Length: 180
Image (cartoon, rainbow, N blue to C red):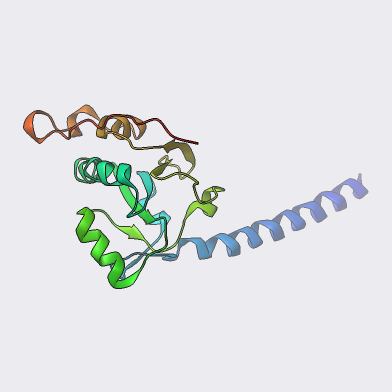
């Protein structure tokens, strides 16, 4: 019996050591680890409890241009429910990125680094591609190709009361087949 108690204490100490290590490793995760195009910093922890939409886009991508108003509309409509973030596929930064923000009329924050590895996602091979992160911080789905406002709103379970109607409602983007 004494042998069993000694072993149990040893296992408890080991578990305590692992818990301490886990706390040390994750404590750095709460810091602002994301650099945004406007020069500010943020953390995914800042948006805990909200849906996160991460859209990969490029200047040369015609469907990306068509999709931007849909993402802007989601950003405006879902302000309390969802965070929309963009990632320039080509890694453009500085004044060139500012030019593209104006050209595309982007209203939501842009990340300067690819957050895909955080969700075990490689850089997409097709743009636009959109990652949908649920309020617990887990990857829910990956949407490939241009999305309509309704598709995005459905993916993030945007309440009907937050969806615009009438003339203010976003137009619907026609799905386009992907070429291999």
